[in-house]
Image 1 (tube, rainbow, N blue to C red):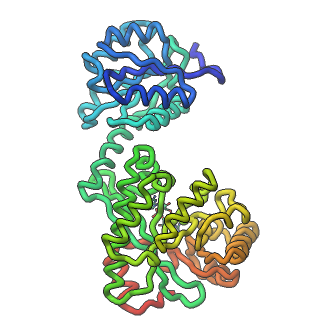
Image 2: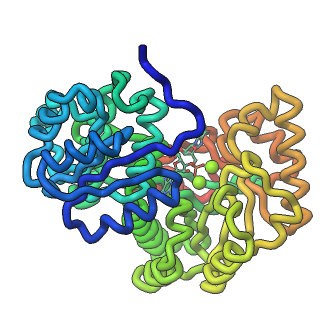
Length: 409
Ligand code: C2E
Ligand code: MG
Ligand code: MG
């Protein structure tokens, strides 16, 4: 019989961490997250002995941290009845396909691309738990899908995407709801992988956030957007604002202010033509700290908008604490605005609320003229969506929107 984990037990993690200076930090982090952790150094005999004594739910092993290979460690564990089904998470530097295959054949449950961070290990624990791989020690583990190792390969690819120039950006126009005049464009990142093809940001941004890669990707996108907007300004398009999405991780990064300041200085784009889009969930943290971060950014002279508005829980009183300029109505409400009275009521409330706070309101994801007309009637200031154009690369944007006057809708 497989024994499921009882609900309230601390999960035990055995870390084969070697002499890594990060070991203490990792243990502290995991313990704070409610795990029971033991750290072991030595060869695979030491690991086996610790596993038998500590009875962990999972063993996390870093390559180069033990004297024998991960493959041999797996074989050693499999020889003992008590440890043969212990899930092994391997943190490895080289995740080339043949190595991944060898680890899989050896029985490794998950492969993480080194260097891993504490939060990556916590995410991995949650995945294993959800996948049913963590059973009471001594019992047979449930199977875990192959995607775990595919994910490691994917993650390694993402690490190289920047240097291999596989990342690019597209621009989607934002237009005046009343006149159709072009007001600006949102910059959206794209990843074109030679094998995976075009990977949508919804798929790789969360991974970039988990791995910390979002900071460098985000900075790259910001600089691309500022460079492009300034180039268009130099060609006479002096009143177009470019908006860039900020992830929660970037927002909490202590270097964010300097990063934005540097991007503006290096590219020459006047700050008022840059808008940073943050989501409601970003604002949900410590309100005074959030307000401080936003005020510092705003002191540069840029604009701030709240993206996907309506999906979180921001109240009027909450919003007025923050120095923001624009609300972007989430496209799920725009989608149903002409057919679902609830969506229409929510959109109306957002417009009224935004205007009472002297904010501009943008309708996102506008696909039909009926939606456009209704948003305009409700008093929405700007619209953005496939009706005007999907996000397109800069040359196409130039050709469609900049070379033929700026009235586009
Ligand atoms: P978002 O910021 O809300 O961007 C709008 C998304 O809606 C874009 O998806 C866009 O292609 C899509 N969209 C626009 N108009 C329509 C429409 O009429 N109909 C439909 N069905 N969709 C429409 P995309 O480019 O796939 O981006 C998805 C999300 O990924 C973005 O949502 C944003 O949250 C995130 N993202 C994109 N680029 C970046 C980036 O550089 N940094 C960060 N942190 N996040 C980004
Ligand atoms: Mg956005
Ligand atoms: Mg949005």
